[in-house]
Length: 271
Image 1 (cartoon, rainbow, N blue to C red):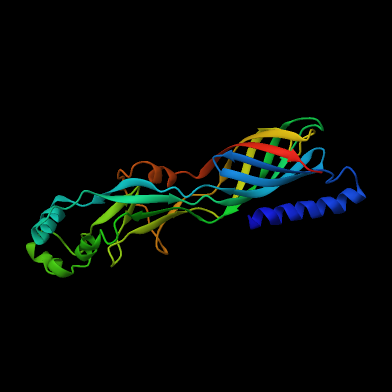
Image 2: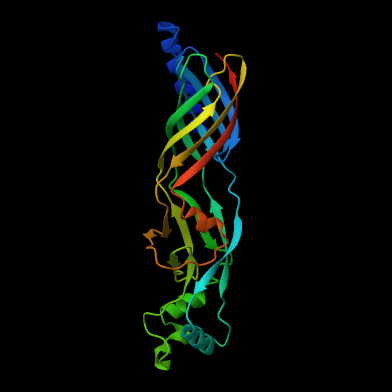
């Protein structure tokens, strides 16, 4: 909300100054509310010239938790040693939750081919946190035995004596093409990061500030947020040749280099 109020104040201030000097520049202001793939949008807009409009505001999505599973990566030798040492079955999957964080701000410029055209090309940028998704095991400490195996602690202290595993053999969760090891508390808290500054390009219909008191705007475009990276705490993980089944959502997001934006905006002219 602070970002929205700041954006509104900036646009109103600039409009007041320029409208007094030139009736053709910054002479109209509107506020809008919308919904789309970027979430719920609240923004303010003004006309720079009859051919250019600008919008600034915030977008936010409810932080809905998504339940899924991640595969555990292991070979049959590891399974044999693990189950013999612990006297219990080695789980093949673990329950995890994914939580998106797509709250962002935006500054967008609508470019019109004529004074009365509603079709526009839009350029600008979205900006927000680089962490777009966090992933963590649902049950606290659920991966403690996995950590103990990897670090040869407790009942796994001397498992190399069986001759079936080496010091290089480890257990971990598979997140797309990434191998995630739990920490000493038995938890795996990973996140997907993209660029915090995301250029935008799109096409749309409708004026940034409507000719009438109330108007409607439709936009379709993409944010260029770069190649997503997986981080375990502050450490960036390297891709491997893994390809586990993680329920689809997290795996898909880790591959997408652009974010599609589809939005519908109701806008009211106030000046």
